[in-house]
Amino acid sequence: MVLEEVIKQQLKKKCGNNINNYIQMTAEWFTYIILSKKRYEIDHSFDPPWDNYSKVVCTDKKLNLADYCIFNEFLENELIGESFASYISNHGLANNTYIYDFEEKTLNWIILQLELVIKDLIKDKNIYLGKWLKDKNILFVSEKADNIAEEIMFTDIVGDCISILSFEIIDEVRNANPHFLFK
Image (tube, rainbow, N blue to C red):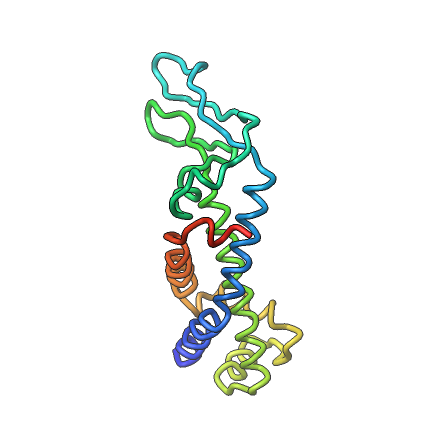
């Protein structure tokens, strides 16, 4: 239980200290999409009378930065061209927006921060991590930080901390002016 609290505390601190890197990553991702991707729209022309099937089609129009007052409008409304089964009666397919990609990108960034925390704890010879690793028969070396982070997530040492951090961090940029992120 003590190891869990140490990791949670250090992970929150590491994410806070590196938030500028996250914003930089977000800006680069957003800029790439605005400059290189096309706009998609939903086409209902092939829908059968009993189903709101919807097909996503590329319009060949560029994305326009001026279409978004806040970053969240882009995340929640701009389609990426992928559909998935909705499993809702009369709504055959649902369509992905950029929020899914952004959530995954944020989660991967947090996992990277977790690996950095593990390296710091190994460097500091943290006794709680050392004992946990010894019990798991895992080497207490920084070269194994990514494996240790994976094991910590697999054994649910950090609980919901990563998901909660992900939501909190995304909330920090949701209401940002997209012109601030575009570079």
